[in-house]
Length: 352
Figure 1 (tube, rainbow, N blue to C red):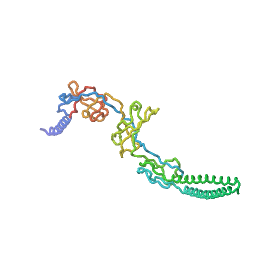
Figure 2 (figure 1 turned 135 degrees about the vertical axis):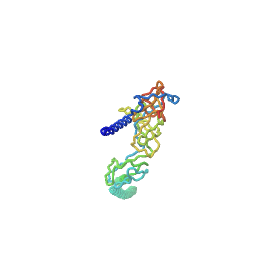
Figure 3 (figure 1 turned 180 degrees about the vertical axis):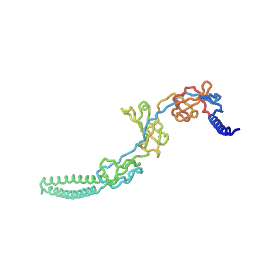
Figure 4 (figure 1 turned 90 degrees about the vertical axis):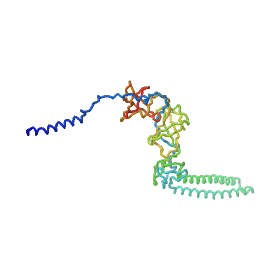
């Protein structure tokens, strides 16, 4: 072999080897399968599932919220500066507990002034009593005219009325002072604090808001078609999506008038106390909505690929894949099929 042949032989062998490797990686030396679905023998017909159509009671999830039956907003009944607020949002309070103190110096001065006025009127009243008594004695002795007696009696009666007015003024001042101590009207929890010490409290302005955690309930506006059959005391279920929980509820109030804008009735249902529930949380009230005829399949027979649901159907002796549209879970382990299957279709478990 000449040197020229040896020079070209080695690159040629390398190129041939490289082409063989590429062909092997491309599958040229393996058996090929035609594109399409592979037909499987339906040998497991004994384990197949016949799709039934079942009449089931269905519920309609109605958007709702959690509210408190016993809630209150604290405000002042007098115009005064706030000197102290003893609670903050989230604190637990008991009925009668001191919440807010207002400045009372001017009211105390007014009380002292009215008390002194009562003392002055009482002194004048005692003098009027003595004058009336002397006038009566002198009149019996015919020593004074009737006009003098009438004047003494009139002065006595006027002081009786003036003394009663003065005493009522004292009571009014005492009540006004009591308004400077704002106490909790219920056992509950502070939701929000709207003022700080040093602020001026005006009558009617919000200072604190409270609610009773033991009085939480579900409030939902239910469309009239499914609201009318509901009854007081009826048991329902409530979904709390944020907690991923379903709780029992019992209807405690049905508002007997519909909202003309939405044609819905307000339904309020009581729930048991749960420390995780808070006012304003979103909920769904599951309201009975009659009965429907549904196709049901076991969840184990449905395979999910991303957003697609697939089942394996026996058809003409072959097992084929079929895409379906799955719905909600009707009962444990059973889901609704909205489209893709007919009653009587036979399903097989997904192939391993």
